[in-house]
Length: 112
Image (tube, rainbow, N blue to C red; front, top):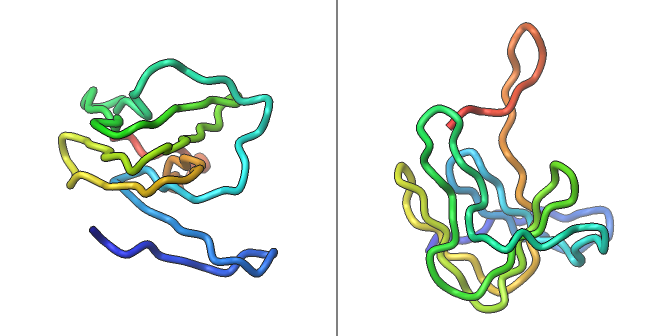
């Protein structure tokens, strides 16, 4: 398992971050109460290929708050995708951030 990249946030605590392809999993302290459980294990589905980032094993819940996604890992869980190496996430709460790239027309989400 790769070691997480950590940086010091404004509360002076290290934040664990993990990346799989175009998704970044950033540890958070809480999931907003407005977020709703989705009831499925598919985190993101690729627009170009149809490949999915999804929870393969472990105990996890996916939440959505508008366009923002959160993942609650109750035990360690493996995230899989057809084009990337499996990613093992430890127990914790994570915000899922989709990578964006700049185009002359403005920023857009990376198409997977």
